[in-house]
Length: 260
Image (tube, rainbow, N blue to C red; front, side, top):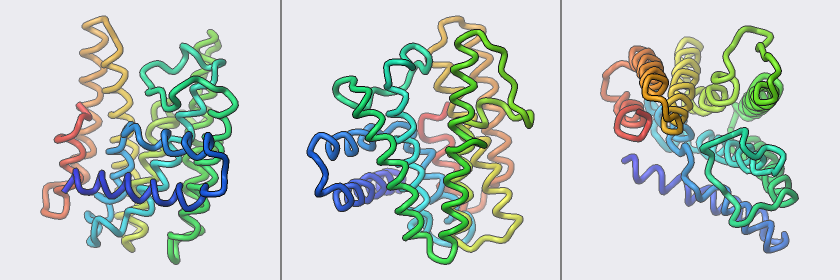
């Protein structure tokens, strides 16, 4: 099922981009497609499908949120290929074949705008709320603030998130939160389940970030500590998810993919 959903997510996103950018310059079209064909953190987008299934609907019910999350993540990630960010965000995939600051900005902005346009038209009666959640995930309360603080930290500036949240929650957890919460919202979940789905997303997104960071660390003690923290977060998420039949996809994403 997981492989099938990954393929469906990729195919759906490819069609959306093709239909939207068909009259655009070839270089721009190719850049948009390249950004979403990297499979980077694809599992985090599929939290939307797992969440909708967990809330009593089908996996496909959450696909609009999954597609949106994928395009938002790709849009932010390609922005980080700009030369001014060189060396700050290590371990990210190179999405464009050749580094091109102008194309990275245009492709990133295009994907973010397309993601918002898409969920506005495919979120059904929850469209306005999903748009608000998507913007919040990448905006001042989410990824962009987290990335800005990370730049400050790289420059030696002490950074503190105003409301006490960690940088991990801002620029990794918030987009995963959007996917998981969005899938639950599309499934018509109760307020309590919506809150639980959002928390699962935050925990899983932070764990994914830590596990990726551990891959880049050479010091054995630091690597061990990062993996330990990631596992604790995943255990917390698993406690919320449970082990019922409708949690199978959630558990597959957590433990059968490359989270740990």
